[in-house]
Image (cartoon, rainbow, N blue to C red; front, side, top):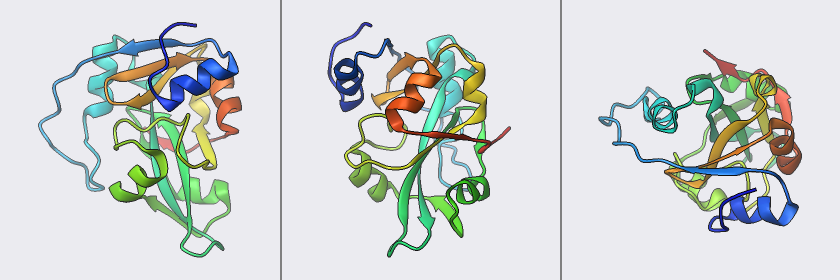
Length: 174
């Protein structure tokens, strides 16, 4: 275990006594090119390059709004490789919902306390059901955001799943 408390994700890891390593990195923001959904197209791979790891080992966390029986829907988390696209249909299917769509930036900030690009699956303001892509199980350790841009935490996939009470599902499309 290394690093000091500074984000809710790191506080949670310390409190639970989970083995982890903190990695900080700096990247020049991508040119602002956005995908059709408004995501920064190159942030994940650029962060992986700054960390010196394969993009498939750095997992991004996306917040989605499910259309289900709950009034107004339900916010959930999807954790997948930084170089993969999300299958919203697969997320909806895994949660038994009609549809899933990326949440607005305002919804993301209210639910997690972080801005897109710095969302951690650990330590959100409000608990959310979480899915982790099945590819995570192929790694001894993986990296996720520690709760702010430029800060990642490395831990075992099983520890991540246990802390998030997450399920594994095939939600990524390469």
